[in-house]
Image (tube, rainbow, N blue to C red; front, side, top):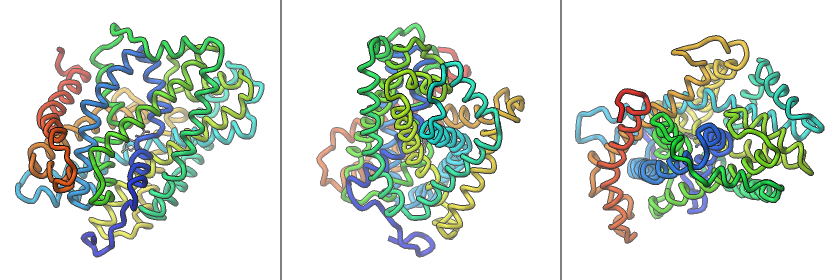
Length: 457
Ligand code: PFF
């Protein structure tokens, strides 16, 4: 199929390729950095429980909705809404524009953290942590993020890597890379799990992850869990719409979404099971926050046999995960700019990446020269992070549900999500339609207003 400018549209070629690419988008720093640190800060299992509910009731339906929009329209995130909104005057495509903006917002800080991860993989490999004490790992991290040049350079290395994959294209770049890298990630993660779970005293970490204490659950905690569900599953901004447009007509959309949500959650739990048992076994605190990955983990891994090897593996797997997620984030503006504005893929990629690196420097420098510069009481880093996960993605999620539930409506849903009736899933689709029309939008709105303190329930 051709796009507006007569380019042939590429797509994912196999069922496994579809799963690899979409799962590759979902799995990222969210699983390895955000999920464990937020779980640790919000009291463990109760947070995990609320998070799981958000994934099932909200994240999964929004993902199916995005797949439906993308595949039906065969277009980028803005073009897709334009094509499907024809019979009305409401400017739905602005939802698509907001999604493209959100891709930039997330990349501003995500590439910075990915840069830390790349740098740490390199540090671990070259033995920078061998023989250091826990206090020294804290020093290494604060010295590293307190400097400007290193983190900025790594952020650009990250952007160049991701750009190279995107320029290679949807099939040869995205599909091929994710299909190769995801299995490696799983194997490395399982090895780290076995190591952590066989440490003496590992049980306390497992308990922490699975035994809930619901007194910790407040409105902002629920909003944080919801924001994490959106961020984790890469939904609420059109990444899955864009990828959906590359999914073939014969693929089963709800089934692929379910597999992604399940496997992604499994990776988060496995990451938790690699981290918390080790943290507890060595007497560290679980609530270190964002530095959990960069201070606690090196400290913990360093104290165990073959520590340097496992530490290197852990950061390599984090780097792989982050890369798959960033590919999908960069693809959103690239698909938009090539299809709607006729730019070449190379030009769209390089200019988007350059913008991400330039503004992204503000986030990266938030831990050094800009640490005192606050906007709305937050550093640039925290502002980009908070705005995207806690506001833009949930609002995008509401609009996407409403668009699919009411604008496209039950007939189009049934047609697209059952491949014209060839998949027998009518009952599932009835439940899905009800959820996207009523349950998800209302739930998101309530959580959002409560979490921001606008209403108190
Ligand atoms: N899902 C990714 C993660 O958990 O790291 C982050 C992400 C990717 C968010 C793509 C949003 C997105 F569109």
